[in-house]
Figure 1 (cartoon, rainbow, N blue to C red):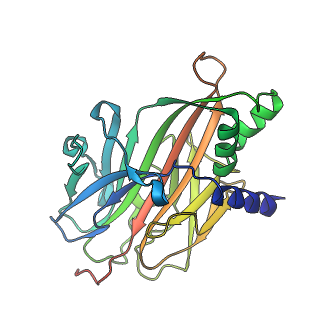
Figure 2 (cartoon, one colour):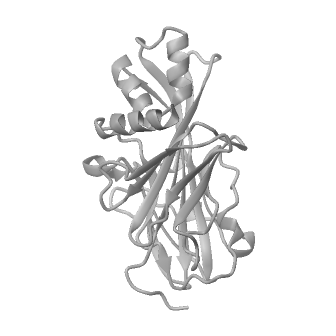
Length: 276
């Protein structure tokens, strides 16, 4: 049954112009120590890709976790303006850094058909099942939604020293956690990930892998198993984004029926070798 569901979701996604992907896009995922890179916060995919309209009062955090678990607040680097980069950041010490962004919630309402298509395309089973069970599939969809995004930035050449901050959850409401560092030399050809929701492994989540150079539709999709895990092929070049969406029904608020979280993980590889 699960392969059938995955295939159906992939077909649904390819035919719907949903623009829910949200991620951190560094100008460069690989840097030299003390070098700076601009960060863009992007939303959508394919022709619908655009900068997220950055409003500082909607930012919960922009942080990085580096070697040794050191956590740095970068929210002061954010710039609000039409033509300004969203942020400029840099790191002094070699290693892999996890950059994380979170924003506040907004309320969204869609006509029934569009909301149902969106739920199917993103594989959001709790909302699909709740609307069917309560005979609400013909009603407009109302949700409160917020977003979480992580990016892996490598400073200097990647070595074989373990970077445990990459494979540890950050405590976000919803996050994709790689079980290996994709930048570490000698890793396998597969990239196992876990999806964590409210501190627990999330089964049944639809996870997509997008090539950011050609992101009209995912190149690989999986549904997480009972341990919240999914296994993808590990790219060795280019720029990549994984994303997942989950929700829970809400019965206590008159303005919305679901509380939805979007989450992504982006990473990329240099076009030329980076010095140690």
